[in-house]
Length: 106
Image 1 (tube, helix red, strand yellow):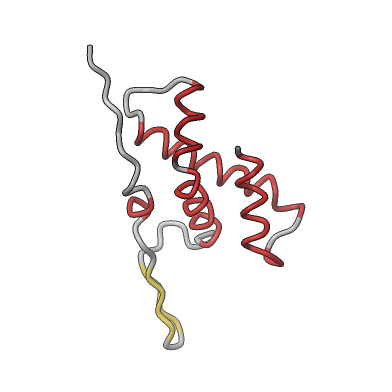
Image 2: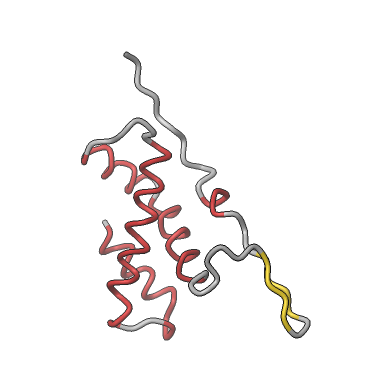
């Protein structure tokens, strides 16, 4: 599934990325996967649960990976103003709003 998301990102980002960027894009995709899985399964998850979460939240993972790509060089920056141009970024948590946590009964 990661390979499919990677290909979608390469297509989406177009000329902005090349083969040399693929390892970095995979890091960003895997970061997004870990975030989704941690929110979906706050008490830990199996490989099967991870695969299920990746399939269910594929679009969220894609959106988060693109968000991480766009914020390179501006990590931790809440806002930016320069020469009359202002930039504000959405909160990272807003990307994961649709991930529903699963609970386990003991």
